[in-house]
Image 1 (cartoon, rainbow over the protein chains, first blue to last red):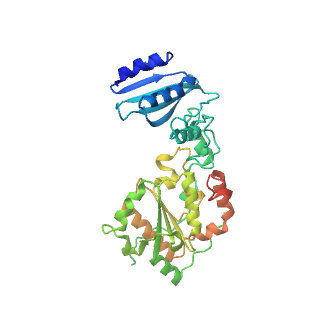
Image 2: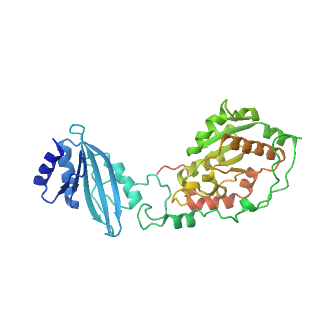
Image 3: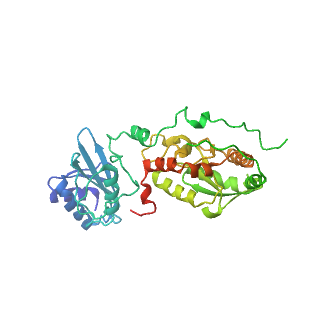
Length: 175
Length: 177
């Protein structure tokens, strides 16, 4: 199967899908949110058995998060991206864990970094941010510099490091 | 914070400076400078410093690189397992002021708020010569009885704990999520 074949197949099975071929061996599928999981199951049945990653893009001006499911087929050797947009105010996306088990970890990461909820995923516990108190840090409206100044405190030139009186260093050879 | 007491010169202090057992907590890229420092090219063993595998048998904690909140917890646990007297070297700009992670949301910017750092090595990253100079300076300071970070940590534990509690949940150490 070539990307062109898959394009016709997808367009016949999912009438709302907008399919592009941006580059060689690459296929982009834009879908409304309720059709993503059926499309993933469909693609898995077609031989796209490897979910490489789920990424999230914050389109803050359009008030949407874009979830991108990257699929790869070892048989046909091309890359399919399933894209969907969800509202930024209440970002909710049903879990893809029943189709790809590995999605559990990717969704855990996105839940931590963007605050997207994945109903059905049983393990949305903290991933790399331990004892995190702030808002999800990869959102565009998160001011990382101000957060760092408030929580960690920047070193200024007046801090005690530079004003502490110390004996000058005289080298290691004893006279 | 309490003022440190007057430095005291003593034979035991001199001897302590002459045999430092180092545990290196290699979090970042700075760890790359340690193999040449340890091995035949620069050979820090000629100054009486040798790497050690476990914190309970070491008296010098070398922190090479940036610390996220998650690794900071482990560093503090490592430090508290070491026996007194013990010293800390902050290696590279990341421990000093955040370095290239100066505006990152999850790395600490000043290590001396959470642990008593005796010597900082500036640079991104410091050369082995700079590391050896810091070791020698630390040894001389220990011999003069100047570097007493372990005592400062003990006496000002509440201050350090308050700083640690600002970034992490100090009551949940060791508990896995």
